[in-house]
Length: 282
Length: 252
Image (cartoon, rainbow over all chains, first blue to last red; front, side, top):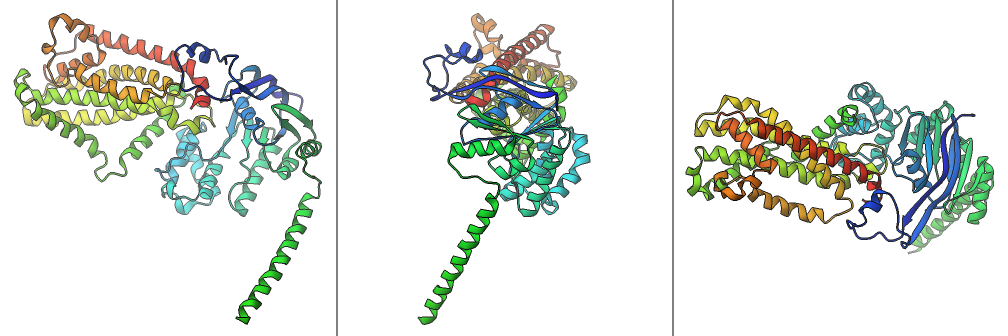
């Protein structure tokens, strides 16, 4: 864990608050040079991030909505260019930011799996070899030749996830894709992600599920208003995050929630009993 | 090169594009043949009076129609291709030219199919066909270069300049009359004919007609001209595309 596979130096990303309508040819050189004129009001989505992520590490990113978590992932993946600063990547990287992109409702599952697989970088030959595994993993054998537009959203995501986990990059960038599908599939997909984390691959993951972060991450970062709000042991970082968000947090959070739910259910049962009595009287 | 590296993906996307286009119509790919044929009928009877200006007016019209159809469908579908694939491009790192090339290739496949079926078919009715016609793939390739270059320029501007979606169809309309589709080149006054012939699509039409109707090989001057134009426009298109591509995700 000494070799940094992702090196981020003083990374900044700004977005203009209101985008000008279309563009004018006078602006074109500025667009090309990636300059925002100074008069434009901007939001500093990321404002000077310095970060090293090491080989074999599973790194979690948390933070409130709109603090630039996804933007950071996109910058790491090279989907968007930074406004200043640099991101240096060593090794191959595949981002999984959303699961059913590249799917077309007008095609059947078979064609979509092939198309998505090739978008992720597989050749036709590799897909021929992988196809049976993918369908078996998704558990959608029956629906192979059904058009995707007739799939439920859960089924779509399952199909996407099953295809996506076949990839084998050095660095995997994930955005909230863990909680996919029904109970049994969720467990399968969790296991897959854990396998990735336990191998020598580098995993960067954004999640709102604190349980996920504590379970699988070696290190975590809390992003607040485009700056690093805390970095280090997942438990400590989550605690810092919760303090900022004014939310209570304890390791026994799950336990407490379950008790509350139990109480609620008990109350409900009592209520419905009363109702039934009502109807009998009538 | 990006298109070698992603060849499997390009092939798959092209086939899927054709599948999506035709699978929900009863006649499927037959429409690709039927619609130019119907247009041919319409134009043939509207311009019935000038049919004697060309030896084989029906075939003459057909070549013009097919050529223009390819140009129109390839450029129009490429225009908005970045926007169509917006969600994909904001989640995956791919050279976005792939999508432009895919649209061009699927249009080329339709065009080729139309060409190899309709030209002999009309020849059956109207008379002989020149053996030189088998050289058509050569011109197809030159034509694809021109179309791909123009598509790249359109596709790279569109995310920044949406008005293009309204402007381009008008230019296409204008182009229909600026190319020798429904009239012979001799109708253009001598004084401006030199400029008129600079249009590479006009040159392409004349070359197809040389092959099919006149049994003449296209002159090396026009071949070179179209080739150089095609390469030139592809280089310009590629340059612009690469310059404008990094911000696509943010502006679409």
